[in-house]
Length: 543
Image 1 (tube, rainbow, N blue to C red):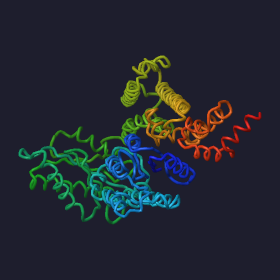
Image 2: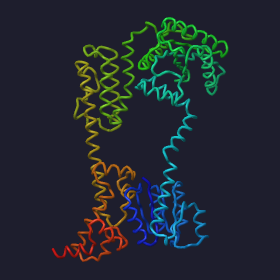
Image 3: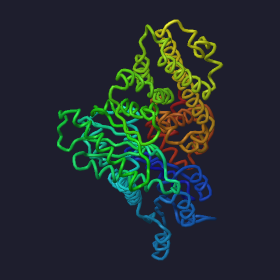
Image 4: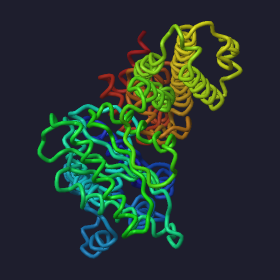
């Protein structure tokens, strides 16, 4: 939707053009009108203007001066000048000032429509999908390392993905791994930086560590490297021969032995102490978050030394405990879904998280306690931000949110939080319904009180403190009727009342419902009702 402002000091011309473009229903235009440059600038200061259709010769400020001011506010605005002067020098001046086109008033409506169509096409081409994608692709190429790091960090953090989705993202980001094949993770840590190494120098050393790693592994493995923290590095490997059925023990020995060589080279050439934890076997992408957490915890557990560790995760932890902890790490996602009001997705993830704890023993396990208080923190934070804690306390037993001792079983914990979430989702839905209904009522009241004034979308949006386009969508979604149609209907209803019940003259009634020109009020009324205002009045008098 593009916004066009029509400006002329002759109201009959403005009303005629406004009425003509309103009747071209398939054009993506939101129309505004003004009868002098000052009023036009007031509109431009409140709302974006895409096309300025203005007379050149106007009192106080002419069209060229107006165009300069509008373009200063909205540099992408396209300008079309209307002129009654077939004067080459004047036209050249308008084109030099940045006009897209000019139209002689004597050329009539078809020439004006053609000029506006030209402006619409120019804007469409400028923001066309192809141009946007081409620009995004160019910027994306420059940002690939950052985008690749962000995406891999999301995968390691437990972001859900499918093989098909990974395949598309791998291609976009130039990740040389197969999204369908398992992957072997190796986690590294810089235990100690050199004393003379400043913070600004550390990225260079990290890059050098990556180079050494690739020199040793690249002959047999496809490799992706990601830095998750200043001293935490992760490599994901897949054998180049594509033989995933190879002996896992042989691959593990190779990875540990080669990581040891990398460790020694970093000590010798970079004077850096590096620790590595090597995955015991390749894992499916779906299990990568839990495997990464397992490897990371090895740095915490250690085996008696604090520097240059070289460990494997084999047989140190039970897989089941890590699968459960991987679900626990999804609690922040649960909070996001609550904020975004996505109830179905929230409930699916909630069921997945609480299922990590056996129902019969949940209250006695550390994992159960961690999930309980993680949920408590999530909900208390949400209720405080929304200032709902006092209201909700009247509807739930607040003690059950503050202490696990208030629950007899894990199933009771699960039911309590599910009920609390359902209450919050229902409350949001009710509030949204009430607020959108209030906005509609305020807009309709404003229209009823200002039928003879400015009822542009920008003005209505200002009245209810919303963005114009959002207000238009909200109103149509809530009522099933567009704002334009509602305003037309309100003006027709009021015009009929004034015609039937008052002695006001036709042009006075036109002014009261927003039409400066009596001929165009007559034309508008007849187009909607099939009768002129006088014909309608005569019929009403006979009743």
